[in-house]
Length: 208
Image (cartoon, rainbow, N blue to C red; front, side):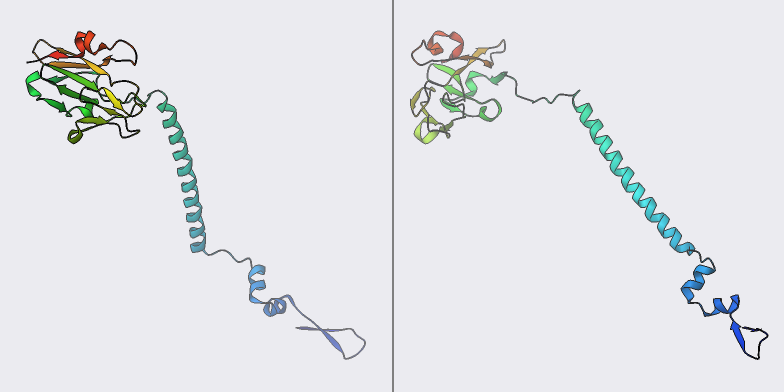
């Protein structure tokens, strides 16, 4: 500290110097005055955080763009349902015994019925609302689980709301003697109309 004499007497007023001002300042203020710097380790952490954020943002943007591109391509490949062929072979007449055979119910929605003199194929669709009936062996009838329609072994309705018998599929023998069934060609028996079960020769096969 310097002493300044005003020249009027022995009193003197202390004047703080620049060095003494720095010496008496708090440590934080001193750091600001001396131009403190961020430690290198802290700078590295901040840079890594920024890189991670940028990586997340670009990943989200890329995923969004890829998803939209795949959705765009989807329009060029329409969805198709793999349905069983409506025309198929089921074997030889000798492969079927008397009664109702359910082997093709799950795969083609048909029952093969063999009577003493003929064989025919019933298409398993209730004529009420289109449900698939069940064959009940103990009651010797088809029973619709939806609304209770009942059909006899030949598919003729006798109870419930079904308005007419179930349809029969086209049947014929191929060159090898196997039975060919075509469910795209059905013989019907409309209520009050002519029943095709007897008039259409392809609604059944004569067997012995």
